[in-house]
Image 1 (cartoon, rainbow, N blue to C red):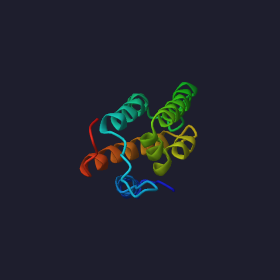
Image 2: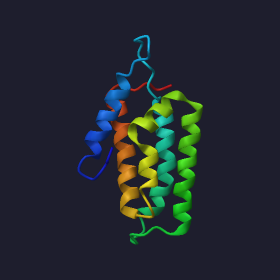
Image 3: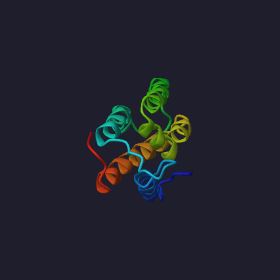
Amino acid sequence: MRVNEQNYVDTAEQVIIKLKDKKDRNGRTVPMVTTSKLRNLLAMAADIYNVIINRQEETLDGEICSRIEYLRVRFLYEAGREPAVKDLVEEAGVMELLKGINGSRKQYLLFHRYMEALVAFHRYYGGRDN
């Protein structure tokens, strides 16, 4: 899945719709990630966003790149703890997007907007709170 500035909103919607309608082997609906868990993931990304947004350099420094790498670890950890988070991380291509940032301010800003879109569509399509 290739997310770019022209398709990230539509892609986020498709991801949430697919997760909302996901069924297990027995035909039962698989619970989607909770709103609070999704917002926690966004909050981790927002900490980095708040630093980047005030900088003009297109190439991110080593400290920010290190924080992005740690963000990957946190997303993996949360995905390992909770199957619904794993479904989201895999369906949304989060790991590939984080790897694809490669020190680019523009790519991180796109990643963050994509995460915001996932949260918005999750809420719009009735994502559960707990």
